[in-house]
Image (cartoon, rainbow, N blue to C red; front, side):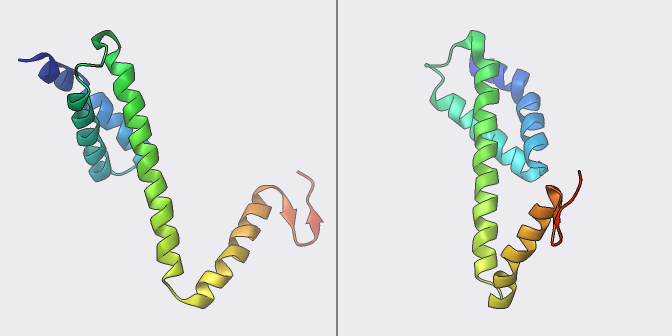
Length: 112
């Protein structure tokens, strides 16, 4: 077994679990896990093997953030392609939800 294969067998479950926790999707976690180990393969000569686990988890976290950003931007595109009346009403609904979360109602500031 090569050093790379050993690292993969030792760290694959941790990387997958971390990605699954962030993304909540087993399929996306599998994709991110593959991306992370592909990145490790590409940077194998540069990675300090004594610090490979923190490196993997940082790369995993960044890949998850990228996925979450893609989700957010694709949902915005999806909304803009839908019914114009629904899109126009969405910000007002969002602002009411935000106001409720900070204790503001249409009557003014609630005692929190």
